[in-house]
Image (cartoon, rainbow over all chains, first blue to last red; front, side):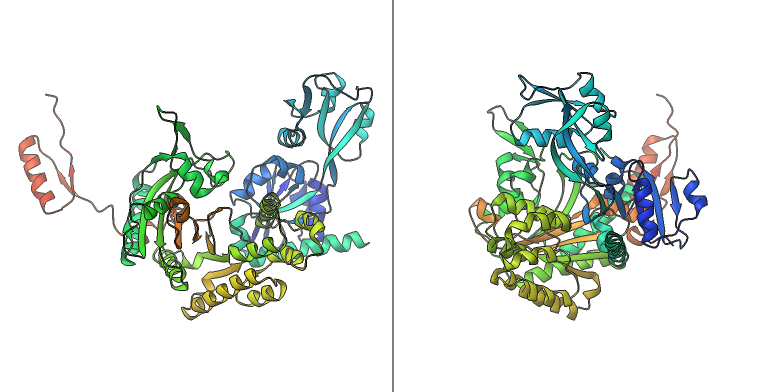
Length: 213
Length: 365
């Protein structure tokens, strides 16, 4: 009997998330992990993982299809979902930054053009300081927009800064830090209080002792 | 945009009838409220942040109107004006759709949702709070959901007391409330760093980890020292004693982190979660300040059930027979080519309240 369904973001966080869950005591057969199934059960049968796109994690959890989810804070800032966020995780640490070409002028005349995958974060950031911007929403390879002149600057996620470096961009400012978060459905938090509570404490304990090593 | 038909529509109607008959049993009178009213009324009632979800438009004089996003504001206005002279307490109930604009991904996303609720106006007593909780429990029992549901209890004054002690600005208050509501311990701790000299700042961080039965109230009393919060905790404790004596303690949880988003609550708040629904099926609480914004301040407590969510849960449990009984009983099949004979027979059966199905094979005239 499945006690808890956990939505896991595919992509950047996928491997680290599985690693954390394994340390927290969930056991997955290598056969299940190497398959292309989008939903797998752990060996005890108590946990089910579903693999979805990062932006869809909040949606599955808010609707209660998944009880919990593990997803980057960047995705949550961009989403409107009404979720509980009881735990910050030590995985997927990165920064959301404003970056521009190294040779870009310091001051800008006229409307600033900003290319990003994060229109809400960008709008909030520039809006808060009263800078009018023209947002260009892109699906990926955002660095190119600045390199090729589609935009004056970009708002994007940076892990090591390597991609920026290689493309001749520099960080102008850091908007906020981001790391993975555990999110929980409101109803599950109440109705499965025992299981959810144990899961939260377990994840918390594992990541605490991992950071002590 | 949602249609209900067949067994689902019958189920929905049966749930509605069940609730209305329970409300009648507790002496609540039905009230029908306007669908369209001035936007300013809802802004006054619900607060700006909630009211702006309303669908708005203007009349020919340029006054802003809204399709009702909330029934409680309308009932409160009626209590303060239309029923100002009536004897108290007022016990009112309603069945009415509300209309809200929501972002698409919301689990509670529906432009239109049918609300069934009660308001008990004019009494500020534990008896009134317990009365509405007793009604809510009866609803869950009659729908056979009592074993699959949890009712969370809180008192907004616990939060208000701490907020007052920290002298928070309205913005900081809203931000902190949101962080507690989301159980976001990490960001909350970061946010509270500048208040760390205040003893109750620590209480904030622990506040939302306090959820459980009676024992958490004593924990809370140790952590939270300001008198306003203490009074609220004492109220919760008294309420809990009655809940225990009614042998309903296993249905309830005290959850100090469930800080409601609606601005009008002033005391007890509660929410109901049911297995099979990702969102809550009902919520309610005490709103002693609301009728004052319509000219006659008086205490009030109420709750609202979401009929669409209830229908979804019960339909999924296929418990229609439990609630509805045999609503699809076969009727007398009436056939015949003589239309007058046919309908004389049909009308006779209907006078005896018998069910009929006309199956005349219509010949083109």
